[in-house]
Image (tube, rainbow, N blue to C red; front, side):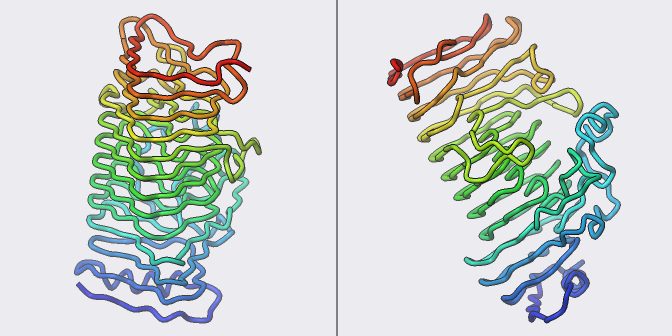
Length: 376
């Protein structure tokens, strides 16, 4: 496969220049390596066996005009876009999955960067976008097999920073996300590894539903919303730091507090093929997060497509909670929650409503659990 070294050109826009090099790799594959400098782009598309590589000092600056973007007229697998209710409720436009970087139905695609390489989403404002202000996604990968994201920083994404749907074998390593909205969404994805990443987001760090075989390892997650808003099976979170309050504000409300470490997500406006199960969180620290978890099967439409069957926290330290966890379910859909070698403390004493809202159908197993700070 070929390597194309693109020298930087002093011109106001570089989209066609970069895309011409990416097109040369179409078919035979290759790497397009951008020289240091400021590169101004709108929408780029990657094809099979292609890597877009950002050298040290390479800066991709996305257009601040929402009209400059396209989704390349290919369908997404985000089923909720077919819901008239959600399109109206969330104000979802036809151009919802426009992005500066896109790959669709591609194999072995990658975006990689060296230290000092960054992408700026420019907080692109779209009055016709989601919530009447969100602009394009940061990157979109749809129905791709073999996605590598490594080494760069992405800041000020105008909507979700990395939107992946129906992808298989995704590896994100050493990526930093600063500000913007969600760090990464993995709807309908199978085989996702997120390692050595630093997410400091204005919305959920890691989100998605109907996902399978997910590993999140050695990551730092800081958010003004939820560390995880997720549904799926076979989730392993280990050696991670989840912390608040956020460095960047929630874009809609302006608040900085981290709501939940884990908020469940599996709703009937899209396909959820299986129950969520085998969630394991181990060797992690949580600090400054308001509440540990929100799961309300049978009482919240965001949760009701499929239940969560089990969750284990092992060798976990939780410091500075301010409110109770909420774990409730219908008796016919039981959930087993195990806390093993877990330490929990509270910021201002145990809240009046207690440590946990629960219900019949919740089987809680505590092994070597230490609770501190229960008195104000």
